[in-house]
Amino acid sequence: MEAIIYTTPTCPYCHMAIDFLEKNNIIFKEIDVSENENIAVDIMERSNHIGVPIIEINGKFIAGFDEEKIKKLLYL
Image (cartoon, rainbow, N blue to C red; front, side, top):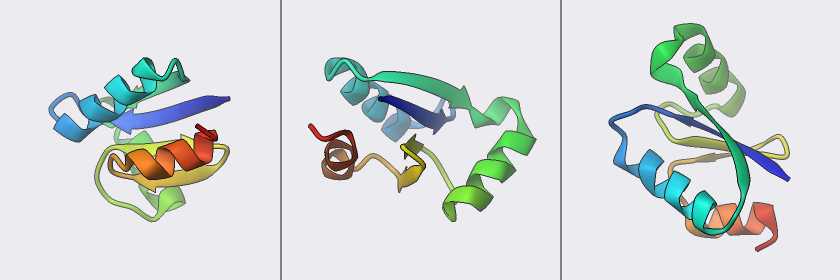
């Protein structure tokens, strides 16, 4: 299962989420939305959330770093 995490370089919760995914050996792709405004707008529209991190797992979105929600979607 692969996760996609939408981040910015200065977001502490993004770093926490990345650390959590790495610690649990979850394959993920990181997309820095500060590098592409179109991606930022797209993910905000698709997820109905503003801000980062936004984590996408199996087409479902988690706004912010919510360890319990991430575990639930990843079946940890």
